[in-house]
Image 1 (spheres, rainbow, N blue to C red):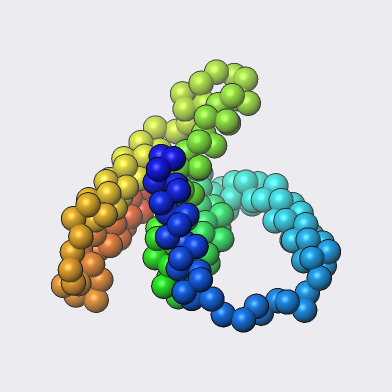
Image 2 (cartoon, rainbow, N blue to C red):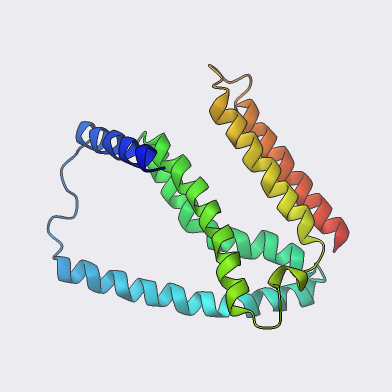
Length: 184
């Protein structure tokens, strides 16, 4: 992991030097940037505190169930920062940064389960979760496996408008949505 980290860091530095452009924010003082960052971070934290209650209300009002709403609506809204960062990285032609962002986010989100389990005092947290989460867990494993195979088997071109591994991930995700909807 250490070797990969240092290798990737050198690659990113080289890419940034190659793609360097004039600083867009040189007229913004560090103090102003830090203040705005803290304000927005606080706003995100406050919004995140209300998100579970809003999701619970959506699940009750629509009858879709907490598992479906949590896997679709809550996951989508909390993943928007990763989406924006990944699109920006791809636009900059920093594909490794985009892929690292998504896979790293996935790993960190799984890590949060362990932290939540530590804070959950009633017992093992996964024993209290709905059995329907097995569908999501298996879908996540399958999508990650397709991504790993796609990283290993480097296709030279796209068959259609999308690569085979991306198409596989989309199909698995859609099947996940369908199964969660049927199990609500």
